[in-house]
Image (cartoon, rainbow, N blue to C red; front, side, top):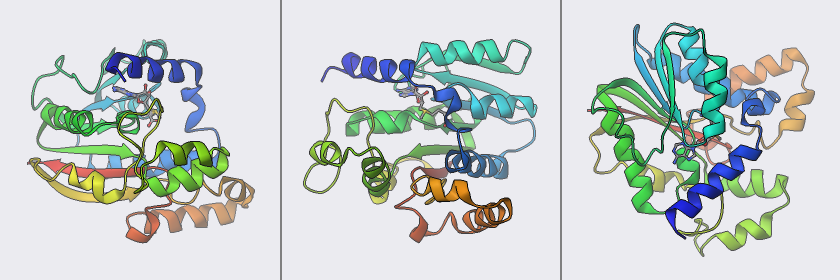
Length: 263
Ligand SMILES: C[S@@+](CC[C@H](N)C(=O)[O-])C[C@H]1O[C@@H](n2cnc3c(N)ncnc32)[C@H](O)[C@@H]1O
């Protein structure tokens, strides 16, 4: 499929979707936000310059700008950038623009202390584009800068999304015999086996830090999470934060976060 046709599919999908509500919709989604924010804050240094790529309507970027960081947020979808602009007119340390992760030429090499690639990897279907997205993300990061990449693991793609959305046959037909999503589908989302994602960094100038199950089992079991008393929910959150870097939590997490340092 031609690249622009695929880009149009992504833009149309998000133009119709209410991305702004996603991370605050319920506990199952909010856990992804809380966990990701913990890791961002764990690695942020005072005065850091941050770039978020695939920033959506700015849930992370605007919160970070309000904490005083110098934040630039880019997204492929014009509607998302418009929403970010309308929310940030009074915030001087926040900039946003339309950009495709595959071409970040509007930014110089080594220009950000932290680069958050938070969505584009869900939508890139061939190895060339996946590698290009990583190369561009790392290029604009400063030496010793922290880069974080959100991605979707194959197991939860089928068990969480497939079962929940009742689209198992459709997802199965989009996969090859090894359970990997085929290279060039007219699909919107793609997923990774964890080892395949890690291999994309094999020849990069990075030091691996960790891989985090940002929502663990919370999205797949969101009705049950929703029903927990406040006391049980707080205990569940503590357990999740305590265990979310463990290998045995990762496959069934709905989202994963790969964290590395640029050397
Ligand atoms: C699921 S949303 C995530 C938004 C936000 N970063 C968050 O974590 O909540 C994925 C975002 O990636 C953006 N995106 C998809 N492909 C992209 C690309 N090639 N370049 C830049 N942004 C892209 C989408 O427009 C969307 O806003």
